[in-house]
Length: 371
Image: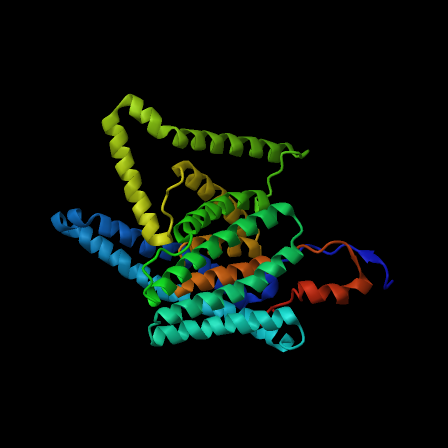
């Protein structure tokens, strides 16, 4: 009986880890989305419409109210991220000193949390910003290594590789620029601008690869409904992508004045997203829309299934490319932790359970509660 091979169900649902963790993530994901829209995007839109705000007082009052709500949501998101990370790290502390991965993860993430709190009390200097970026890299590296060890599908590895290159590209740009400013070096930092642009391209690519890695749509399937869904989704996405890709050229042939107005509107949208999420929109606009479509579909599907991957992907990409605020960095770290929690068990024997648990952990409630 001990050697009998059994098939265990896939795991990685947030409901498997306790009600506190489950509802913290649900509220965090919703609050993060509202904070992104109301604070990081709408408040920038209000700055873009400053002339209209002078003429119409109700516009000024509206955007001021929305910005206030967004700022409140920012504080709420920060508290929820701290709570989710604490609930995740506390059970791992018993393995500190016994397992290398748990020791490194708890140490680096705890240090990152301490630095975040310290910089809220004492604003960081240039040295503090560089130290914070270094600790962020130290926290992301073990999470990345664990992801590649436990996820064997090439689609998931390609998505994660593109995302990590994007994040590390931004961290390099931020750190090297701060270092040159601190030492008052007048020379341009080596490859800072090029790596920043390349990192943004990789982040956009990762948002599209998410659909391949976690979207779950397969063309080669006997399920007619799923095959029809694949065809309709591909047709709709292809049509929208083609229209956006050649929209400027078509409008130029129709009316150059209309084309110029659309370009200015696009520049305004790009400016808002650059201030809010760090995207400069130097790539064709259709690529950003394709990434948004792929990411949105995948996150909604995974979240409705209750899987940790949906919440992780949602937090990671809502943090944006430019991690200018500390809670955005913590969202990326928490997102990677959630992706590492979302794995599927293969057919194993009962004698292999103890050995496998060293790598996949215990899917029981994180805080040890019973429902």
